[in-house]
Image (cartoon, rainbow over all chains, first blue to last red):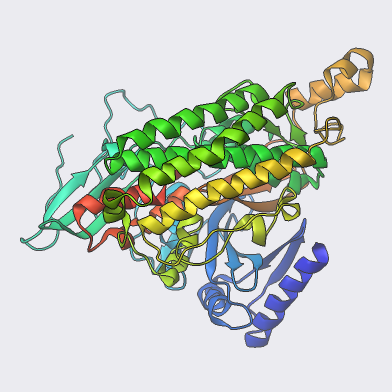
Length: 174
Length: 398
């Protein structure tokens, strides 16, 4: 299985490095899963190449998620799990973001399916996606304070919510 | 609550609030619909009414404790949620599960798929006005839940799959119970088809309704029966097999019309395929053999051993007080849930509690395509379209 995975990683890494020498900063392999760490500036272009290049064809954005490694720096990681349905491959793109500047390019122009996934990450972990057409909270009420999936947000919350509290009704997207 | 929507769009259109307590949303989903007459111009789903922060709660529990939380996400597919979480943690640990346990997992997950499709079929039919199908579907679903009760002692929140195998050996008499169900079920599926497939009202309400092109479905990350009804045979059980699915023979039903009717036909065909898998799994499961891997410190020792062996008692104590610590790393596993690709991402920092647990919930991501599907349709078809995506709000909001 690991041989197979290395092949997948090799195809993608070679293709991306041939296009731009800086596109792949690091290749991580763990338990047969390939993860490519991409510099923040090149994320959208790399993703677009993964989708469009005939040797890659990663047409399905399976999942996007984030990890908070507080108090380590760079604190945040955003992971995109990509699937190529025609080539039956799977790998992960990873971007590392510092705690002081958690901003990254949105991948909605590449995969429209990233829309809600990035809204969820923004809502729960407070990472900003530039170029996202509709970056609002999605699971929590509009007037919620903080981003609960951050490691420095206590599980019990940090304020008392009165029993009479009714969240503001979310206005429809204009 | 003081704020009421200000109308959006031109003066010709009106905004209608559907939900959050609408019966056809099967949970609490609110959709703000902008209507021009009876035609939907714009739709904006509003979620989060069932958000319970399961992913955050997992970070405060040991790896074993978090299993009980997974049951409560997609409450029509608790075993599938157990499976994906256990597979992800097992991958993190590099743990092999005995074949016998893998087959039992496959068998129960396929029964779960049938029961979930039965709930979908019943509620979807009742939304479209076919009351009797609902009663028949829930009658058969009850039989499946009785089987789960036999195995796990619980009808719904089973927590039967554990890291490294199963919670318990399969109970005495399980073969007879499943045999009885397998004898009954094929003719029952035929009965549902008799009631619906050629029914002119059903055809009128579903054919040509809720179309989405294959390209749009892939671009919006749709998976599961919705994508297969659009003509793409993407099924994790075939493409990225897990839990020994590569040893089973079954077809992946697809259609090309990509409307509500096609999704109905795909799900009915999937029930038949699942019955085939359950039958094969039964013949593969041996009468005795281990159902838990041999991993002291991770998998709890047998009860009898604890009374005779000091080490077993120590391991038991350590597992349930401090848990176990997988090596630092990340693992992502995707399985095919009744609704589509259910993924679980677990990151470990080398401590006994997960650094991050994330679930890629198929309901959440498929629901994203709802505006695309219903814009331009009539308001009466919105109900058919929500039903046909088969969302579970517990899974959407987590």
